[in-house]
Amino acid sequence: MNSKHEHTARPWILSEANYGYTKENPYEVAVLPLGATEPHNLHLPYGTDNLEGTVIGEHICEVAHGRGAKVALLPTIPYGTETNLRELPLAMNLNPTTLFQVVTDLVESLEQSGVRKLLLLNSHGGNDMKPLLRELYGKTQVHVFLCNWYQIIGDLYGPLFENRDDHAGEMETSLILAYFPHLVAKNEDGSLTADQGATTKSRLEALNEGWVSITRPWHLLTTNGGVGNPHEATPEKGRKVMEVLVDRLGSFLVELSESDIDERFPFA
View 1 (cartoon, rainbow, N blue to C red):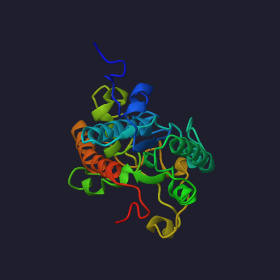
View 2: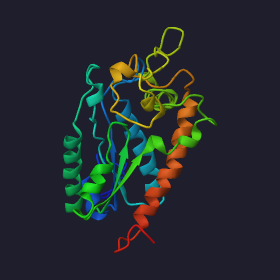
View 3: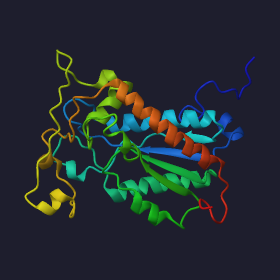
View 4: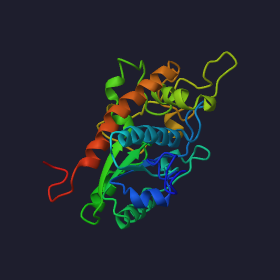
């Protein structure tokens, strides 16, 4: 007969864990995916960033849990900062200060529960979270780490991907093809319904060169909200991305879980 606290679901996912399990198995690390709800060219779903953050979080936490890490994946925040996509329909915006307050409240919940290590697994370029880390420093016992996961796979451009991906391009489309293929819109011949993901140049050369920056108005920058050509995407490429992310972030979670918090944490 099963013990009343025996847990057959995935205990590294908080939504599936029960109180009986968490009472007996306290977590050391929480992972909070940060997503967005917005257009992704003509072929990817509005929830692309949420789907990616969730499935990546599930994979990295599963591997870390299997290696002994006491890690919990929190539910993904499905809304992000969309102020520069306001001209595109149903780009569901949280202003940066609102998003910061939501995360701050969740950090307080973790602190109250005794969880002292948090990884923000950001899946949306509009969520600029580094200022919040600076604001929280010294105000909470929770050590907050930030990973924009799409920035740690830069070495795959060239060896794996033919085109750079800023938004709904080859890399993101490959991930969704690998894990959510039924949500990718295609033509009758099997090709993607997407455009080429081309962008408009600025009349100001300093912006084109990157010496000066703005918050980019996507209705002027793009045709359909895509930046990067998605048409060479394949499910195999998406699975390779996941393999690299699991190797790098899964190992980080294990190391983070095993690290003692002392006066020099996380430094040697």
